[in-house]
Amino acid sequence: MQQILEISAPILHDELVEKCKTGDSRSYAELYQKYSKAMYNTSLRIVNNSGDAEDVLQEAFVDAFGSLESFQYKSTFGAWLKKIVINKSINHLRKKKMDLIDIEKTVVGNLPEEETLDEKDLQLKVAEIKSAVKLLPNGYRTVLTLYLFEGYDHEEIAEILNVTHATVRTQYMRAKQKLLGLIKQGGLS
Image (cartoon, rainbow, N blue to C red; front, side):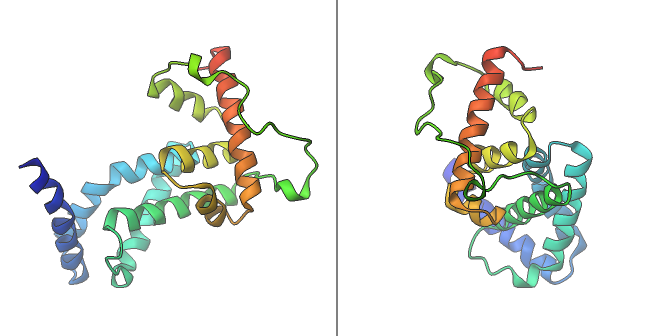
């Protein structure tokens, strides 16, 4: 029975999308209800400010609802909407001048290929890690969030952020080092 529910959920959401395309206001409200919390959390992990995440969420839904005719069902509606939310969140950070350092334009010395901190000794709860992630600078937090929480690979992140793969890799390694340092210091709130 559980498997039937899992398979039927995308079909029900597709029906809602189709009803929205005909202008059914209840379907718009239902889609918003189904996706708003998850999309808000996605944005919040990137922008790290609840007011900004709410603004991004509203803009993303306005854009998504205004572009429903272009939705081709090549992915689920949720995946399509999530991409809009992530792009809006990143654009919001860009407006706030998020600093991503292009590794090809700077001299930073050699970074270790592998993490030198002993990650296996760190047995932490997810909530503690999320708290530490919130303390990271915007650039680090964005790359780490897209990689760890949203499941994008380095190449996809480079494309989303419009930076080189090397920049993403460097930002990720530095973010991981900073995060582990915060955790070892007990710098969690």
